[in-house]
Length: 189
Image (cartoon, rainbow, N blue to C red; front, side, top):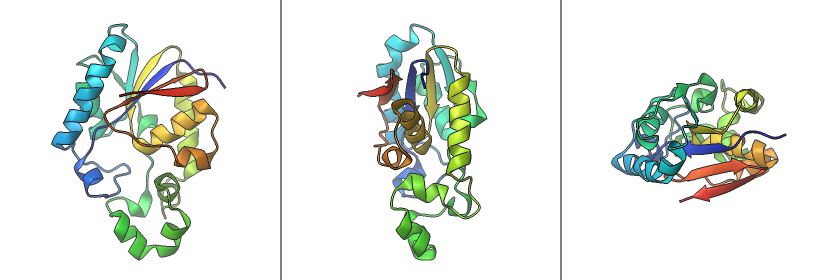
């Protein structure tokens, strides 16, 4: 499956990222380091933004805050399909708390993508993958997307033709830009 070129930005570090706390669709503001991540993305994106690409962002505050900085004030469309995976009962818990309270689920899912998608009361992988693919299929030209780590793993995996297991193993960098084009990704740092 082919898609238009996508520049994918994960939001900068948040307070809950620093605490190893599961955000899912809950809110947590960027840390000072997270603001630096977004500023680094702004420098990387300046030549791209000069071309006036279509820009999209998750509705969640951390992605909105990152988009405001990283896109240099350019307008963007907020799309609910770009929200992070809904992690059900795990939202607001630290990874250590999940391990203590849900040892079997935690033990069977060592990677965050799988863990979040197996959360009791959560969205689940199939629904999450489906809405990301739906968004990607709606793109009509080169696009900038500001979103989240797990969403980014799935989007990057779809473009590159990866299995779910390989998606879950992808790195989740902050302060970089993933360029997705021609069934491959490159990273601008």
